[in-house]
Amino acid sequence: MSSKLRKLRESVTSSAAPSPPTNAVSDWYTRITDYLRSECHLADNTVAAYGRDLRRLQVWAAGKQLPKLQLADLSEFIAYLQREKLAATSISRIIVATRIFYKYLQLEGAVQDNPSELLHTQTVWQRIPKAISPTVVDHFLSAPCQVDLFWQRDRCILELLYATGCRVSEVSNLLLSNLHLTEGYCLVEGKGSKQRMVPIGRRAQEAIGLYLQALRPQLMGSRSAQQCPWLILSRTGRRLRREAIWELVKRYANRAEIDPAVSPHTLRHSFATHLLSGGADLRQIQ
Image 1 (cartoon, rainbow, N blue to C red):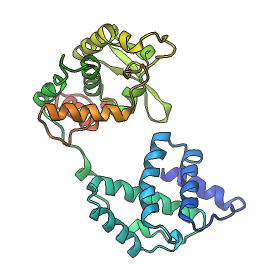
Image 2 (tube, rainbow, N blue to C red; image 1 turned 30 degrees about the vertical axis):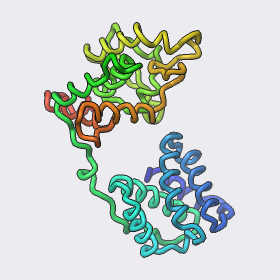
Image 3 (cartoon, helix red, strand yellow; image 1 turned 45 degrees about the vertical axis):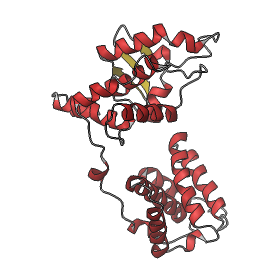
């Protein structure tokens, strides 16, 4: 991100300055989201996440001129978020979005100093999710059972998240054509549209095979393969959204009576931790 900001700074100083936007919060919000998308080439999900965080600043700063806000004002904004009982990790993320926003204001020449640089976030080690033990993982992965309407699909999802270390969005967007079950791997499109080959263990292969045989044809219904290119389908035959995957992870974590803070990212972190403890190369995991 910083390198992209520097490139934009160079383009701003070497060309005619754009007409400055008004002080209206909504106008600044539109400018920054357009900038993140078109100039920084961030993924839509990332832009949407920053947008949601900046909306909170928009709500709090209604009627105020953003370029004139000082450190004391932004500190009060953070205090407001704490009074709203947001999680510390959420507040840290909002601070990052605020810093990017004020860096953009600097590039636009709307402010000289960036007061958000003095806001404090949690250190990285405080935000790293706690890995769950292999025994607990095994109990969790077995949570979907035959009383659940789509238990084969749900178990397939949980096994994929843990066995591959993939992000939720990567599992949600995984195409059936990129699954090579016999060979034991899949092709995953990650950040920056970069594709990588990810091995799939035997247990996950079995869960995927069961889902493909027993449930996926029912979810497709009368739709063609071209209409249903994704591996993981919803009850309507569409791509299962990442929000729905988050919800089912939380639901099965509750059923398994494990830490309610368990999330898809917990499984991803546990995957990496267990590989390292088994002697895997950190560079290969990354």
